[in-house]
Length: 162
Image (cartoon, rainbow, N blue to C red; front, side, top):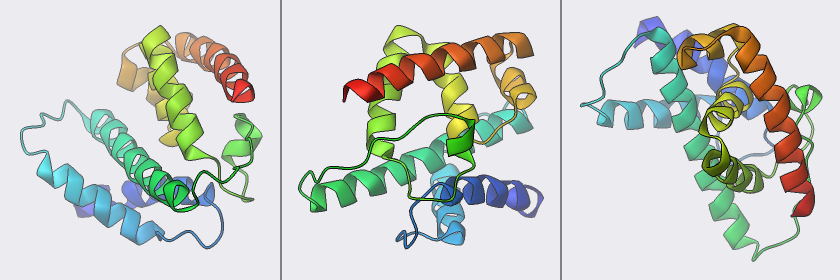
């Protein structure tokens, strides 16, 4: 765990930076919850370091989306603001995104094109670089860049329609 804790902390910090202020989950709690879920996956065969962090990013995404769904249900469907899925948004420190809407749109994209969905998941949710994403998916960096651009356009249109 000490070998990967710093990287998990970086991932968790990346996630939490995009959340709204006063979020009920702190960075350390997100890391610990993700760790507990990863330890539960005993039969998981880690292919390499990139694979571990890709799965970790996915686990953290699931945790935050679950919390967002829970909070949304408590608000009885209150109107949440639409968000923009772009590079500026990823690094913004304003109000958090509507993770539920993004998760739903990402699930719809996965039906249409699973690789593009994985690229968004790894880049947007996981905070991986283009090179790291290419390594995880076993594709060229140019493919990741192309998928990233096309997926953003597809998701933006999907989110605008909501």
